[in-house]
Length: 193
View (tube, rainbow, N blue to C red):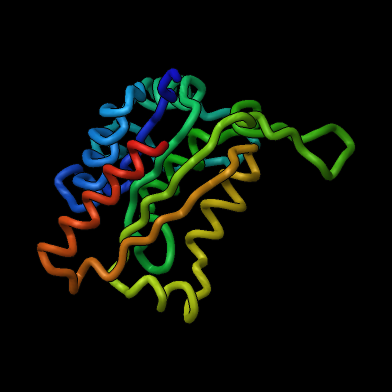
């Protein structure tokens, strides 16, 4: 069986973070099973995260964003690794999505219709999400707004499914042993991609 083409996108601005370590563990696990991987660390890209005029005018893609679109096109499976800040993804990841998941690339509105074409069909995704709150608290008290945003209104809207979500909380109060187990779990996810 041939391995998958997997793109791992680190949405934490700092590569040297626990999210960065999770991404590395995932990639290492995937490689042990023959998957081909590519890695994008958003904190190392050079781009304006603001979509200045919405979709009214075309905003030229910086080279890093053009390469990111090419990597998304190449990938069969996309893994996003990021923390929950204020209930959702960091601004850098949201800005990346605003600039990359554009009409004509991720979706296309149909003329005279309320429906749209999902242009990224045939791909799957996995979200590895860290948080300071316990996972159960984010689920039952806050109702997972960031997970729903990423899974339903961005990825599935663009045709990417299934989308698996793995929450890692509470990182703030976790021991080194707990963090080690979470890193091992990320490696297992990579093996089983």
